[in-house]
Image 1 (cartoon, helix red, strand yellow):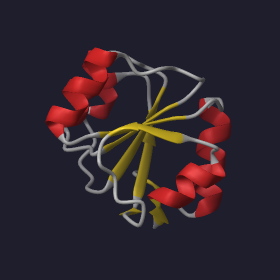
Image 2 (cartoon, one colour):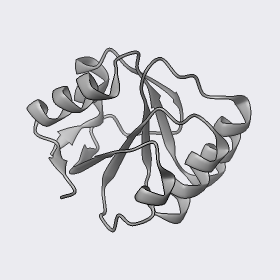
Image 3 (cartoon, one colour):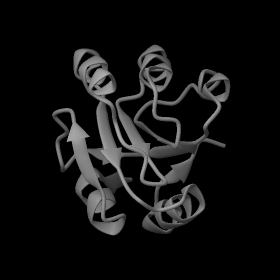
Image 4 (cartoon, rainbow, N blue to C red):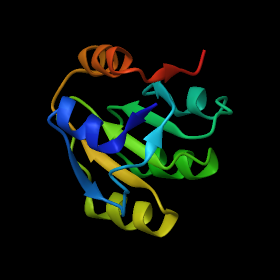
Length: 115
């Protein structure tokens, strides 16, 4: 388990929308830019790591009950994405690291892979 605050600190990341509890534990991580792959995941308490910054990412996360999205590669969240995420109870975090580096750091912190 990794706390949201640890993720922010370790990745030099920031929350751009959502009402995240910084002491919330996240158990699992999954990285993909293919939302069809995300739809196959059946895990609770999951952090989605992606570089896909569009509305489909929010809609897919909502369908998959994912509450935390981490955008990598310095991708920015649009106002439309923020609005939809807020309505869906999703927290979006942004960081500038590559997906590879981000996943490596998250694994080293103790975040578990889905499979």
